[in-house]
Image (cartoon, rainbow, N blue to C red; front, side, top):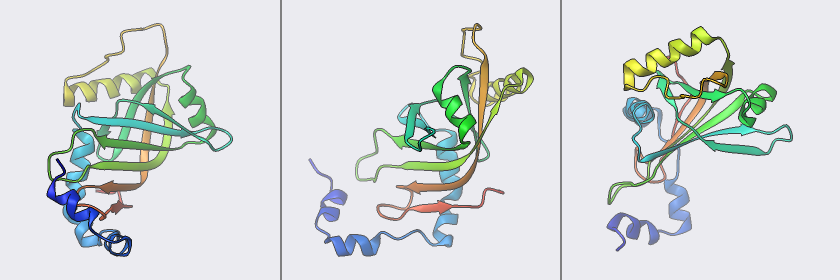
Length: 180
């Protein structure tokens, strides 16, 4: 059964949809800024997370990953041989995508797309410090039991965030300032 929200959306003309689909005002974005940050920081098992890297020829490569968010900075653990690491070495511009798998009834699906610059951290002490911070915050420390491979920290500093579903349909929130 289709909910009332989706039924109303389906009755709109293309012109009405395009008129409604405008970036949130700075005031509207500010109202949900912390909610967006908290949502990606504490995303549940009902949220899929992906890292998108670029191949040498510019084609995208997407992998499901875990992501630990500190402030707006995203950390992901990887192993030295993964293809995504070579992509990042060639081009440090990456994107993350968080997508809600089971939205609540009568509410638009939430998703957050983050573009940023990724740094590959190989220093064992920094990687261990990341594990320690993650464990203190989430209870999950080094959950990579295979000590035979080199653990790398992929640390991404955002340059742009686009969030949808926080202000309803067709009202994307763009965040460009990550100083707070």
